[in-house]
Length: 124
Image (cartoon, rainbow, N blue to C red; front, side, top):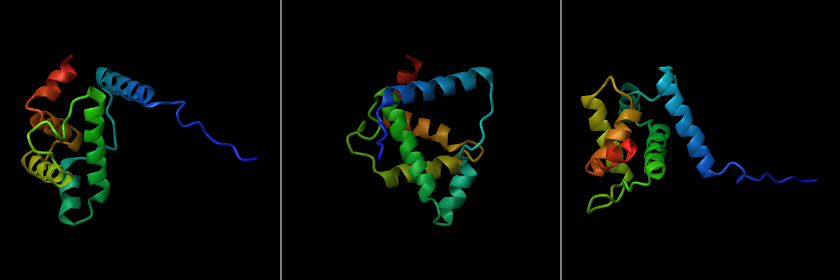
């Protein structure tokens, strides 16, 4: 007998709540988290043409930022931002900030694309 899973039991709202709660708790406790994507790794992968998994990670992360705060990052300016433009922006960010990680760069990207509206939204 085949059983089907109900994938909607743990819906998006619950996911974001748990995700944001965990991030907030980790930051409040000063907990270090391993497995982040640093700028050096990003740049090495992009230079060696082996960055597809990192590009998907950044794309998904920026989409998550937009959904999490309901701020339109991709269409905030007069012209829609493409995936390639995001990757190029991140290349420049990482070249200028080699000790930072891509998560910080993603937040900076979101804020720049929205002319500061993203950081205002996360302060609410």
